[in-house]
Length: 346
Ligand code: SAH
Image (cartoon, rainbow, N blue to C red; front, side):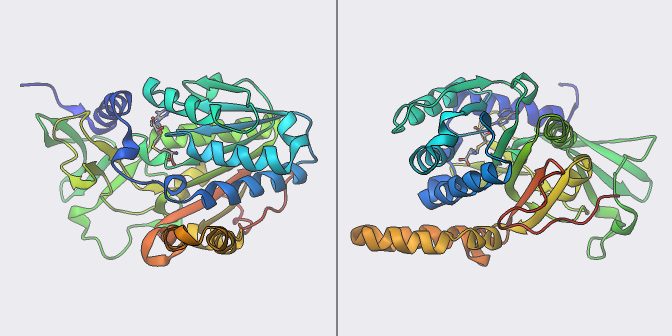
């Protein structure tokens, strides 16, 4: 009989094993894999940010969890083609733990029309100081969470033992880090209420904010999740593209949880925030539908697939509403394209 393992520790180990041995993108398609227009409009967005930052002579493009490297390669193609002065001062820093995916990223960037200066790191803290544009698409959802449940007898925390849940009482209620107005949302019966805490996501956001404040720049976070903290069990596993038991056979499946954007915003309250907006709103403001229409017109044989890919990213019933976009920025940056300024943080 093995010892109970706290959910965040279980998830961290399972995902490290999973990402080290498999290409997760064989299981599910992410936005940059669905349509090149995603990276192209983000490339134009990055060029605009560089201008708003005052055309810094040196700039780091940092991506966390770059997967196959498709997004950074698409962005790099746009920057090197349309903003050579920016490209000349850019360094690419990729935060990736999986050796398998690092190789895929290197191969993808090697195909780029202009050679990119690329370095890999295991963590954000390892990236040297410097003004940056930081990107993370479907990275935060892979970070481990803890789950607490409110029972009539008090709070319990969820552990995993022999592929099953074990719930252990906690003396202190978890620090929910909820703003005062975010008390238990109505529809969930209190006895079933699960509250998730992403210590890793909060820590990452805090470190990101400190870096932006120190060195300048902008961070763009795109993921599926919610804008308000609340009670929900969002842990999920995908195996061969289908929902599966998250506790079975650790390392064989991709474990994720919805991203709590409000918790990230609170952790990053030291910097300016834009959004969150839905992915549909953001990409439409960036002109993705027009870009897809132009691409389709130039490639009539693939027009249907190109237009369907773009629709998948923006349509509310597809990825347009579930996915959210939020930016964090150095306070000197007062406006960015596509995202409204967020409310002041308490
Ligand atoms: N952003 C990509 C891939 C998303 S899959 C895309 O949009 O296609 C998640 C990525 O995050 C993978 O590259 C995975 O190896 C990486 N990853 C997951 N946990 C990580 C961690 N703790 N530190 C660094 N990278 C991590």
